[in-house]
Image (cartoon, rainbow, N blue to C red; front, side, top):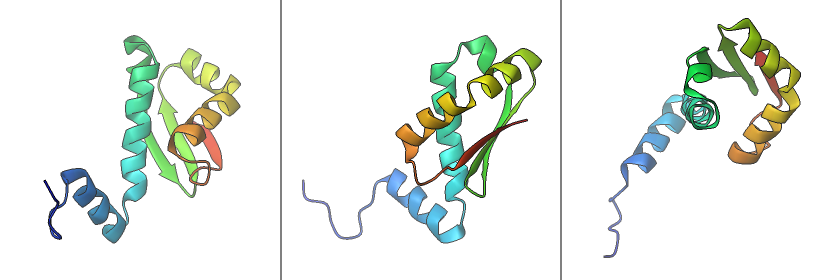
Length: 97
């Protein structure tokens, strides 16, 4: 079936609104959080309070001191993973709080 000129998929529509209203970073942050949910064990994932993007920097807030330390030790590994999955041009740094 040929797509008409004004037919859009819902994901395309959401991305268009995000671009117009300037919350594209929030959508990418949700994608990163979904990626972490798949990558980490459920009990570890529950320790992640929030994921945001501020000035090309991924900011992950973690409640558990042990998980926070692990993320800090493997910071370059996680940053590389995120850059490979979501684009190297989107992120320059990773901050663990």
